[in-house]
Each structure stands twice: as structure tokens, then as C-alpha cells.
Length: 130
Image (cartoon, rainbow, N blue to C red):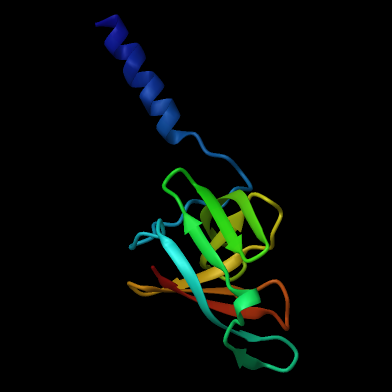
């Protein structure tokens, strides 16, 4: 009986603990864990829309363990990611472990759109699920 009470107290404390300054994880209603291929990007000072050339191709592989592999023709980068709601814009955002700026995420079943929200002339990247 005593161990049951101790267990209940530990569970109560662990579920009620909070960390200040850290945004809560976003409840994403679809699976980000997949391979995504860049099909277009737009924005910048000119505000144009561009189709990636062969040397601009990019593939993102989001894994269940919060690891991310970014593949370009000249480089493979491994990092981590987390999904959070950004408090300044109240939208789901992807935060990267390698110091990249966070990107706002919108999606439907097979399309992922990542938008820079910290740069006024930023880019929007559109990916399709592979």
C-alpha cells in the first residue's frame, strides 16, 4: 500500500511539472516522418517562384526518433528537429538542432510547405512526399 501511494505521488508530480520558456510540442495531425522532395521554392527580394535545378535538389528525411537527414547533391547533413508552436505567430514550426532558423510548417496529406518567418524577404519551400 505504501509503495502504491509513493508511485501515485511520483506520477502526480511528474505529470504536473512544467518547464518555463519552452513551447509545448505541437500535436501534428499527420505523419511528418517520411521522405520529402523539394519541388519548388518562392520568395526573396524578387518574390519569384523557382523550380530547383539539378544542383539545387533537396530531400528531407524526417525520422520517428526526431532525427533529420538533409540530402543535397553535394552534401548530406544529419541533425535533429522538434515540432513546437511558435508563440509569436501561433503556428506549428520546425526547430532544427543544428542552429538553422525555425520554419513555419503547413501541410496536407502529401505536400509539406516550410516558410521562413524570422526573415522579412524569406523563402517558402514546397516538398512532396516520396
